[in-house]
Length: 172
Image (cartoon, rainbow, N blue to C red; front, side):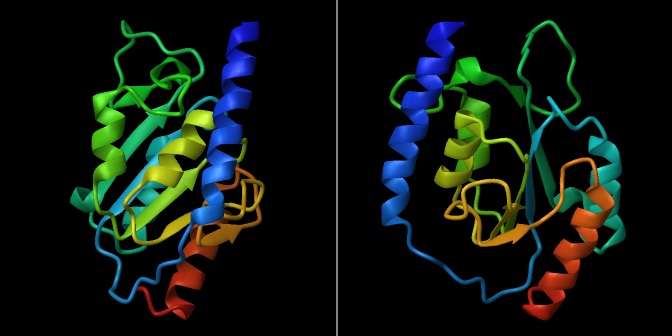
């Protein structure tokens, strides 16, 4: 248990040092593909969140979901690919192939649906090849292009604000 705290601290320090070299990018095309990175430790309404995205004009086929769990058991059946903290090594590298495939996919929009800083989620966000990243304002400001000030339980408010700003930015 204590080693997990040290590992988490070490990886966050490595990540924060690498965030000094972040280059901002701008999305000039409309959003077609969406990646959804969810922390299922605190948020359990994944289907409702996906339905809100679909209701706002994103095609269900263009939404790819991956779920993080604190207590990860391989015996549990998951409708979406799932990963845990054990898939992060001491160097800050993700060792799970499903997570690496998700991170390397070129999404038009990556929704980081977690409001508590966890090392593996922050590394996945930072390493993502997504063109435009959206998350909560409680997370490090250098990880996301757009931050929404709400908590994870208010998914309807989050989606409403997200699409409001995407329309303002001419991303839809």
